[in-house]
Amino acid sequence: MYNPGEEIVQIVDRDNLEIEALPRRIMREKGLIHRACYILVFNDKRELFLQKRTDTKDVYPSCWDVAAGGVVLAGESYEKSAVRELAEELGVSGVSLTTHFDQYYEMDSNRVWGRIFSCVHNGPFQLQKEEVAFGYFMSIPKIFQLSEKEDFTPDGIDMLRKIAPRFPQK
Image (cartoon, rainbow, N blue to C red; front, side, top):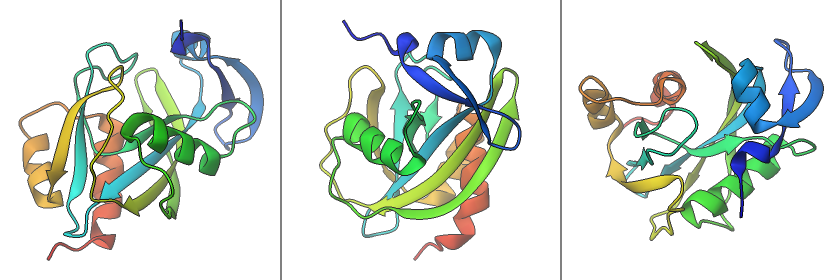
């Protein structure tokens, strides 16, 4: 049986330089800095695919998330991680990914260097039942309105605030 806590992930320092590779479980227990990829999935109307995380996620369970993505494994590039995570979480492959920027995010014990990507895909999606409860497309302004009332992944909503000007709404 697959156990995500035993995945070997890349641990980095505050400058995003590789230090070591450790099981995800230890990274979470010790609050170590790691890498992650974030993929914003837009449709042709420039609406963003918003997903509800399952209640079994190891970080931010049951929160809304504006991006597909996840932890970069040891020996894996951000780009390979993004392709893998997009296929695993949403069943999307063969799309062109645009790279936007890297950001460091820290809150409580979640310390992460993330690379932000985007793509266009109108669905349908094949949601990974262990990670994504459900999702749908929504405009960025409506996502910000919803974030005032409901729980979102804080790193995701922070990243969306930074990138939103690059995706003006019609």
